[in-house]
Amino acid sequence: MNLIKTKIKDLFILEPRVFTDDRGYFFESYNKKILDGLIGKEYDFIQDNESKSSYGVIRGLHYQLAPYSQAKLVRVLEGSVYDVAVDLRKDSPTFGKWVSVELSGENKRQFLIPKGFAHGFSVLSETVVFAYKCDEYYHPETEAGIIYNDLTLNIDWKIPEKDVKLSEKDKLLPELKNAKMNF
Image (cartoon, rainbow, N blue to C red; front, side, top):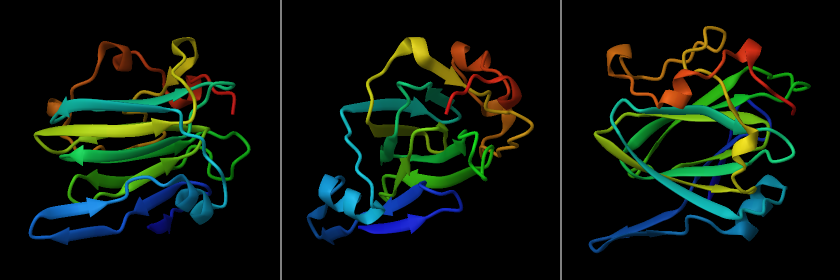
């Protein structure tokens, strides 16, 4: 597995070694020992989630407040997304900065997002099947988020505004300056 460091500490892109032949492909999508060794930190992923979405859907920017904040290891099984992680750690020199990566079923890249980050993605393909591991269970009472089109963050989601599809809940998310945070 190849580890790609980003401009934000503790935020990594992972590229697995993929073995292909005339039958298809094989790769190891997760190996705790290898991942922990690469990043020098242990993660204990305890919950897997999967979603299917259509073109133009933006999910996020979501996170859970401490003490139930989540680290995530995200990837795409089919299709492609523009995936974004925003640093919300108040004492971080990169607070409010974000990193993006295109994840697809083709490139098989993964994004390791530590606790203290908001996460979201936009669907670039006709449909996408998105999967991720979490190191904390879902706690709806600690859900928080930031509106996708926050002017301070100024994220280009790679989707024309007329095609953006949001959940009713995501339409009500606050701007970064008004968001609940306790990291």
